[in-house]
Structures are given as structure tokens and as C-alpha cells.
Length: 417
Image (cartoon, rainbow, N blue to C red; front, side):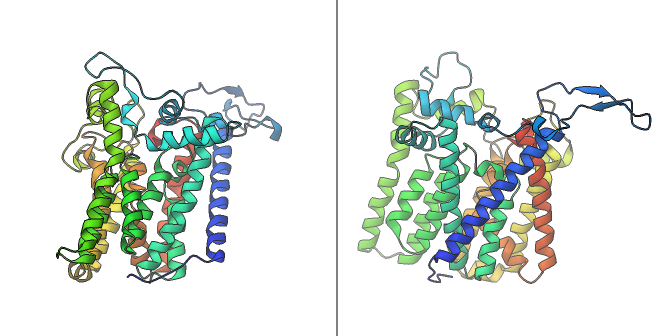
């Protein structure tokens, strides 16, 4: 750990090609799904079969290639994207929190829509949705570069670090890394925080961590990781470095402070983004894994409203848990003896715990939320380093579920949220 590595042109080009190919395959999967299967909110159309040896009725599908539906920007305008783009173009909902109101967009943190707004001014010929997707893919590329560096820092070979990057792109729900969502921005800021903190570039680490706090709620874990890295690097003796890092730490709180001040100005409540979660967004802080344990006692395939496919969410969650627990068991001595290893492990563990602490009943969104846990990918590659078949098995599982979720996304199925 702590290996000095640099990005060569070959590595940067390889990751860029891998990113382009994976996004092209995502588009292809969506295209096939849109034309083979029915949209979630549309009535299916059936037609009589012309042949006696076929069922009397069949689902109507395009026959000529030109009759097929191609993905357009509208097909990427789904779910939370509406809220991010509305904030970027119109700002936050201006209503007092103590007044009757529908679900307000205060729960969506400001950095990503702010970047869409700024970039939109620089590229006025692009629609906001296109700007959001452009930014997401640029952030994703930067995130993959830093994730590769983190893998090398942690002692992985070039091939293993590349495998970590590949797993990120293959992970179920990775489609969200390229659409107008915060996943790729948060992943990039998290990767920069980890890499720079490990490299003792504390100013950049605190900057990235501070910005991540106004991207998504778990950004606070990036701040905790950076602060922990400073303490472990510098020891517990008062030094000039501590004074600098304390200043960096205070400055890293400014973005969130400005956001909460703005919330107070328009809602009358500094903590409106968090209070609104339980008021109108059906998110309630609860005991960790209550929804997962609830699934064990009462298994379900899908919720009546369609927002959660319990079977898929449970399967992916269980795999992530098993990998994380297995890594601790196998590397118990190393983790317990090396405080830096323990810090990274606990950091990743919290990024897994948090998604299971915001919804007491169902497993809504947990697959997508866990996607930004960088240590998980590193641990998975490490555990399967001596078993190529084991690694291929995980890849196969990721690929199958990723295809299902990608088709579900393009066809408007709610469970993919």
C-alpha cells in the first residue's frame, strides 16, 4: 500500500476505450429491450397470428429495422433526473416547510444541478439533459482513472486494477453512471478523496470530500476518511500540518453550510433537506438492515407500487455482504494490525450500511446506492485473484443483472430506481 503510480497514456486510452465500449453496449441493450419488451406504463398491443402452429395472439413487435424505436434523449429523462434538471433550470422549490406542500426538491443536493447550470451557460446549444449526461460521462472517466490509481496504491497489479475498473462498469445499475444522476460525480469525488488522502495531498482531499457532501448524503464519510487518514499519517502529536488540515477541514464544511443557509432562506428550516425526506419522500432513518431482515422474514418479488424488485435487490445485496465479510475473515490480521487498512474497510462498510438505514420496509434503491463503494470492487478482485473461475462467476452475475436493470431503465420500470 502507498505505491507511487502514474497514469500513462496507454492506461488512460485503455480506460477511455473500455468506457466507450461499455456505454455503447448499454445503449445497445436498451435499444433491444425497448423493441423486444413492453414499456412499463403503456398497454401492450397484441395481434392475431397468421400461422396455425403459433399461439392465436402474439405481442406486436416491429418487423422492419426502420420500424424499431431508437433511444433518444427523452428515454434518459426518468425518475430523479426531472428534479435535478428542474433545480438546474428553475432553482429549488420556494415554499415554507411548515406550509402544506407536495414532495419538494430540497432533498436533491445542489452541486450536480449547479454544474449543469454553469455548463449549460457555456454550451447553450445543448439541452439540459444532454449537458447532464455529458458531465456524468466525463465524471465517470475521471472516477475510473482515480479508481485505477487507488487499486495500484493498494498493491494490485495493473491487470487487477484494470479488473476493478471493469467491475465498476459492469456493476448492476451502472447505467446510472452515464445519465443525469449524481452517481458518477459522487464516485469521482470519493475516488479523489481516497487517492489524495492516501497520497498526503490533504488540500485536494478535503476539497473533494467537502464537495461530495453537497452531492449526496454519504459524502460525510469522505470527510471522515480524509480526517482519519490525516490522523494516521501524522500521529497524534500536535504539528503544523494539523493546523493546515484543520483549516482545510473547516473550509470543507463551507459548501454544506451555504446549502443549508439557502435552505433556511427559502424554507425557514436549516435542515429542510433532511426533514423533507421523511415528510414527503418516504425515507425514514431506521435501524441498519431492518429492510433486509424484513425481506428474510417476508420475501417478496415486487412491491405493489412497482418501486422495488425485492428478489433482485436481495440477491445483489447478499453478494455485496458476502464479499465484504469474506474479505474481513480472510484478511483479519492485516486489517486489525494496519490502521489504514481498517480505515478503508470501515469507510466502505459505512457506504454499505447507510443505504440500509433510510428505508425500514423495502430495499428500494439499495443496489444503486451501493455502487459507489469503491473498497467493495477492490476486495472482490483481491478475493478472486487466485480463482479466475470465481471472478468470471461474479462477472456473469453482474452482467445478467445489469442487462435486466438496463432494459428496465429504458422501458420505464420503477424497480430500477
